[in-house]
Length: 366
Image (cartoon, rainbow, N blue to C red; front, top):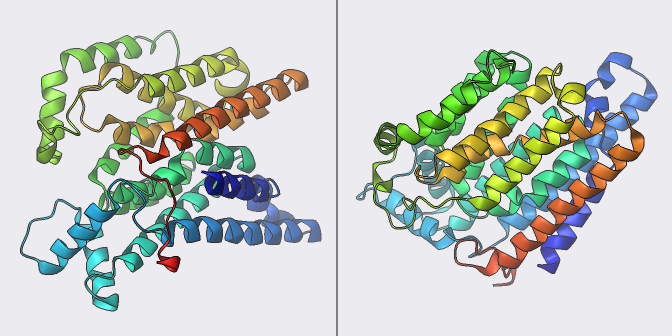
């Protein structure tokens, strides 16, 4: 736990000196100051990537499905047993087996770590207006450390983060292409296309507010249809004692609701006329509706995290838009403290069977 806290503190401290918005526009000015900031951004990003990649790539037995994946890798090599992994991940495993041997699973986990860290970090850099706060929220939410488990999903989430900028730029062709790449690692990523497009174009007014109760009612009465559609994609989830349990995630409901309430306090000032902020606001609202009314959906968290991850961009956008300096500082402190407490609780539970990210072990000393 101490190691994880130290690493998080170190990379967040490095992120403090990164100005992503300034770096994106630096080429337009051509000044020496811009050049220095761009170079500093690149050096620090590489440093952060190196630390996060190394911690993930050098682990062994860390993550609740680490050894399960190792067994599945062997099944892929044997070719005599049907594997539920998406085709993109299977070919990635076969490539690593061809290059390094059938049971050299550590190199496969290292490549997965590379993809996850690289695309997640680049996605945050390209989209964040306040990089250090967005990156802190990414770490404090546990997104990075949970990538030690369910590794296929977090590769897909990395691609989704990277693709987000294309939605905001209304550049839909590369957006769809990158989501296509993501679904080669986890099919749930296909949901991102309609959800993100709707979130971007949807504007709230008296004429559209009815959509919220309609969506809630639709999820409740449409349970048989929704479950039937889910099981067409993931038939092995039906009746599964681990995944198909219908558990209500009160913690995630509380998080999304708290973010919603905070954003509504400053909606007119920071969100209403800001298409980017409105997009992430809508994603958070969609996640809240799903968590509240769709708990019957197997592995609902994996679906909602494509929306919840938008909080790391939404909160800094709202905070930076608060005109009152004292209130802005107060809210920054309160939100940072709340997420820090959540992060510590998350790490305390790191030894549990469904997380298993503690204690940290590395194959370097094995």
